[in-house]
Image (cartoon, rainbow, N blue to C red; front, side, top):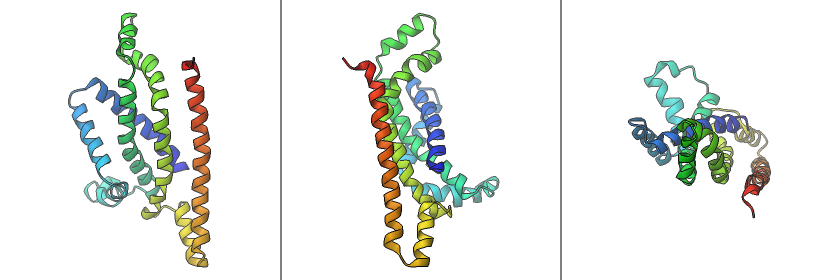
Length: 201
């Protein structure tokens, strides 16, 4: 959960920045963001984690001291931010352009309009997909044990190896993940209901 929460926080910040770059078509940065999205959506998360933890330190010696836990958070952040950025961009584009024009006409800057008018409305549209990505991120933290992080999958593997109770160990892991997802699904339903209340007639 700690990996997923930190990963989601950083991914959300990064995805909002990238989405705004894509919406406003910032020169150079827009092309770089498209390349970033294409790479991280087009390659498996496990490959990205291995490349980040084992590959990059050979090119950039400053990364040699990076621990597996940090590498897992960075990998999750970069991977899921590429998906979340497109969801947020689509939600922003879905807001009527006249609202941006109206806010600018009363003296707001484009950044103020985006922060105060557009993003709050876009968050309601993007919430279901963002929650789904968070759930997917929680499940993807199980890949961190391939880097040596002693998370729940690694603990289950060690327990099963010592007791030879593989079924019980991995069934327990599955039930824990399932329970967390059920709780998050309830939270998502509650949040959607609350955000959509103002739009119901």
